Length: 162
Image 1 (cartoon, rainbow, N blue to C red):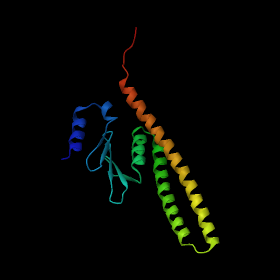
Image 2 (image 1 turned 45 degrees about the vertical axis):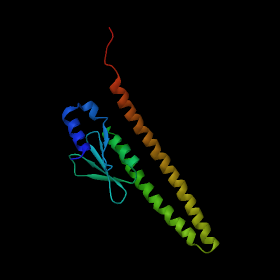
Image 3 (image 1 turned 30 degrees about the vertical axis):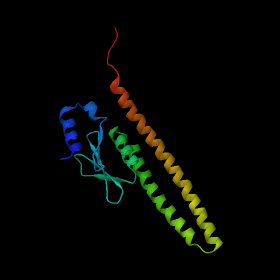
Image 4 (image 1 turned 180 degrees about the vertical axis):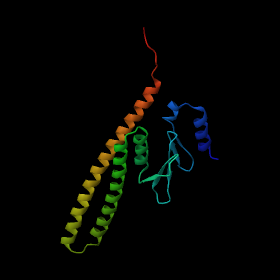
């Protein structure tokens, strides 16, 4: 049994739900446990597989940041944002493949007309990629704000002055 598993079991048994809501752990194999609900594990294909405890469904992401952001939104009951992150992650994978293909075709092009076409395609792909990354970054910043609110909300004293 790994230390992360032991730690997770300890927190499940001993720690209240407030702390479990902000707990994120990582073991030696790179497997993350979040909020007592989600597990993110790297796959052989260099993707990240998110599983939800008590559920058989799993989700794959190309980047760990996107998987973590998805978990934060899902944990905060923001389903629309979570599904948007999943969609943007897939779009980013697709545009990266398109960019690689168009760059390769550009290198292999022999005449100037074909080179011009692939230069334009590479430029379009680069612009699309920048837009997708900018949108993903805005969602990442939103998820950070959600986490900051949770952390600062736990530190406030619950005293009422008379």
